[in-house]
Image (cartoon, rainbow, N blue to C red; front, side, top):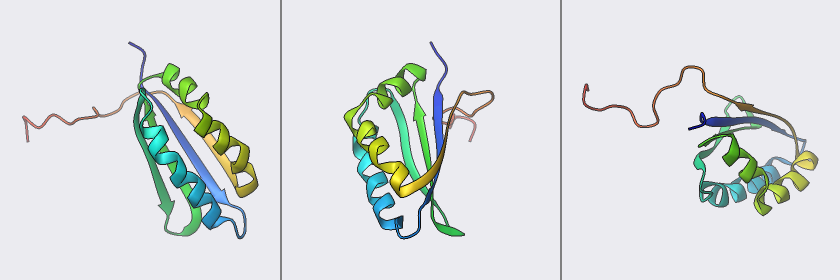
Length: 107
């Protein structure tokens, strides 16, 4: 089994585009979470900079990341995001991470 894969993306809205960017990101939640290889798809906001969002995505493996990037909803996002925000996106693989479901037996 391949290792899990995480996408971490930091998006900073261009001036006046905060609302449009948030709308675009919110539109990605449901279809991304419904993908077979998706384990998480969360949006976070930087309280110090309300126009900065962090996407925290977790996939079964790199194959699931590739499948995500081939979807119509991702292609739509990609066609719009650069006009709304500056972004940095990273696909990272685990080194040392906690289990998805913590072991409750020892608690």
